[in-house]
Image 1 (cartoon, rainbow, N blue to C red):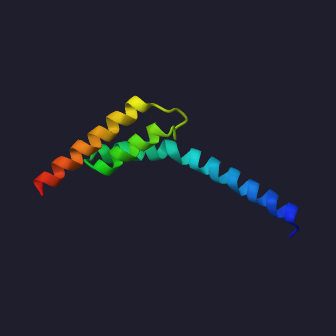
Image 2 (tube, one colour):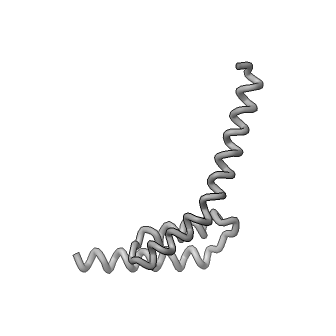
Length: 82
């Protein structure tokens, strides 16, 4: 394969990865919300990450802060109970 062909294939692969990541973020957020409702505190922290970095297309620092705080409070309470 020529160097130009390799570079083109590399660019295509990067674009496909970005599209794949974007396509998964919506369903991932929905699954994290389901896990949050079931009491999984790591999923709450993951939702904070999604909002902080705009993985759904929109950054919302207020929501991220709320999810991070909720996840921390839940995991801390769980640690004290153990």
